[in-house]
Image 1 (spheres, rainbow, N blue to C red):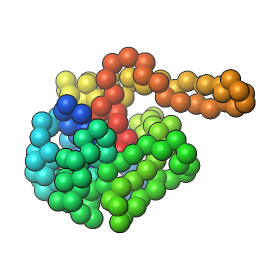
Image 2: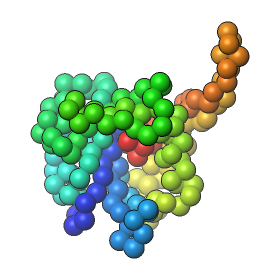
Image 3: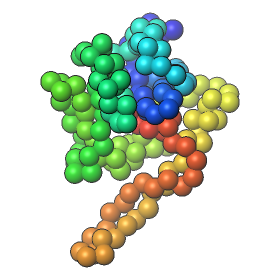
Amino acid sequence: RCDDWSNMGVDTGSQLHVVILRPDPDDSSRRHVVFIGICHAFEELDSLMERFHVDRCVIDGLPEQHATRKFVARHAGKAYRHFFNENQKGAAKFDHHERKVESNRTESLDASRAAIRDKMVVLPRREPIVETFARHMAADAKKLEEDPETGAKKYRYIRAGGQDHFSLAFTY
């Protein structure tokens, strides 16, 4: 249980991978991971929203569009569907009317990795679920790609092996 507000990220698919963070009481720029887990039904997310006083939840908008819309409607003002948009530059773009957020995948993954690397996130003690979280965070690799027609180069994250669900939930 969390008495302070927290943020929740959810990656959707056959299971719902959830990461919940709350602010550090002594340093507002740091976050503590207070929950890493898997849910099997969207209704389970409702109880997490209450239990951890979730102020903002960002949930993967695909592939579970119908269930995700219903969840976001139940938590209007607190929950947003997330979509990656490779043309989005800079900060994530929140659309409060549509209850959605768009971000650039590469920039978002860069930011989530920087938060871990720069020790702006405090992880729970080492347990099997934290080990799984770490494997998911390491499942993507950044690769420089070149457009064959223009020669333009840009970085993209590619799957290096394994699952990345908790990585995406943390990134959201």
